[in-house]
Amino acid sequence: MPHTILKLHDVSFNYPGENTILQDMNLEINRNDLIIIKGESGAGKSTFLQLFNRFCDSSKGRILFHEKDLNKYKIDQIRRSLIYLPQLPVAIEGTIEKNLAFPFSFHSHKNKKFNPVKAREWLDYFQLNLPLHHDGLKLSIGQKQRIALIRSILLEPEVLLLDEPGSALDSNNKRLIEQKIEHIIDSTNVTVLMATHSEVSFTGTHYRILRLKDKNLMVEQ
Image (cartoon, rainbow, N blue to C red; front, side, top):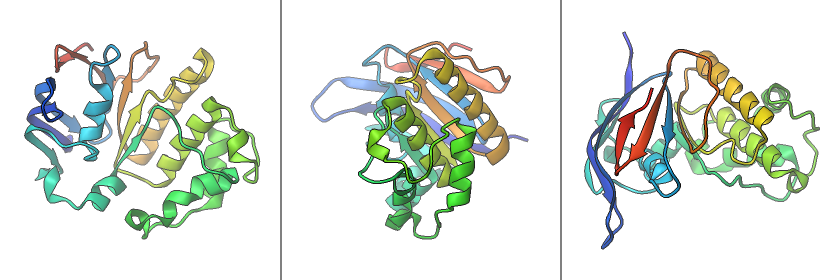
């Protein structure tokens, strides 16, 4: 029987003093689900993803994580379990290894240890045939996006919140990323919510496409 990991009950969001962006949303997400969130620019896709790890909080309604109100969890516990990957990848000065390892120094990940062997395996898996000592600031935007995704995977979250992960990639590499995401779900028990404005090439049968339109979610597939 599917295990429900996230639930939205009549969730709305607006910034103080501004119009409503998201309104009366209801959704159940099971473990290992792949949820594709589509919508025009400005529809609220990023805001929707950010609600799940409390970069912003709903103005109305409830979000449940393992049947418990999201607001009842400590922030560091949420950020450890539900990792948000922004559209523009972040790279710090230093090597690829340093870029992959630096989140392990955060308080929220103090119980995890960076494993360079696993890092090498994921680099190869995403066809980044670069040494760990390669300068992270000399990577292309597309390479940085893949490094950021690998960094998130190494932290072993329960949920990955991916905001346009293929936006800086050509069509072939975008297709590669989507194929890898499907395999990651099958092999690691992670649940993925992915925002995109473009068409997707997923081949599995367990994904759902939802569209943000008129401030609410509509089932597209």
